[in-house]
Image (cartoon, rainbow, N blue to C red; front, side, top):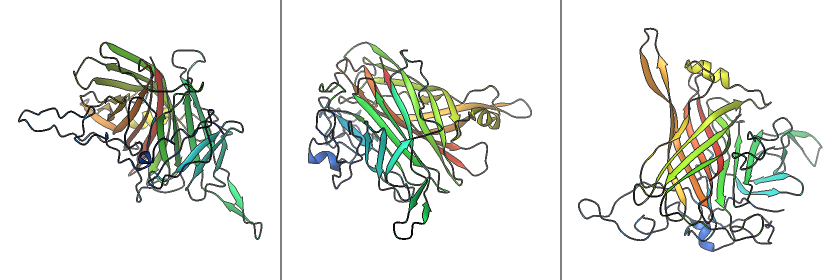
Length: 375
């Protein structure tokens, strides 16, 4: 097996696999396994200084990163995973890894998902949408599924398994990657998880770090892929799209400003049928496109380690029978990302948003998507 995605818990569990250079990408320090999701600095700021507020007191911030690397630095890899939620089932996927030789995706700690090995999906094997070799062709976005039945070894009776889907994406350089696992087998969201990371080494075995520019702006383009699950109904849906992102390294002075959007989103049934239009029609907005998923612009979203976190949302215009237009929220949540490279030329991230499903009453959808983009 090559490059590993491992959802490390406080016990420090790791997959028994290595990267191409025979090292585990998360075998850095025991403290990495016990991260609390904060920036790692006692006062909450990125550089260890305590900037004064208007009244001379330290600035308080609600900037919270997912659990993972406890003491991140710009000179090494960083991983983040979904926080565990016993009620919703978030963050239960553990020891996620990828077997490149056999093209198998491994996940542990999810009930009735077969033998923990997921094979390439036979109906939707990939969510790559970019033209090969184009600016947006930033990596591979592969789809995996668990086996449908397991045999009782005592009586040879088949046992039906819950359908789980996994998305594994790795950048062309091998510097960044993400994985998402969800199931549609429950009336609620069910058990799963996500992880995203800047690796310790790239595909060629070179050390990976990040150096943030101190001036100018950067434009990023890439691909987006994810899964939609639901509250109050079962089932899963795929989603794909394009990501556009920009960073102003000069303003808001310290830290910098970030903007981003997920455009051209398409939603697919499990057999690959494009069902985007049914959602658009249910929204009543006209046209053929889902609302643009935007990153809220504001200060305090990027730190010196190259980690970004902020709010994500989308809106649409609703027109009533009298022709009165109202701006409505379609979905809202958060995005998380990590920059990589000598010129911060690569970014990997996760977006998690929720909204009311316009096709069904009292049903909420959750979209968990990942993106990889480059300058």
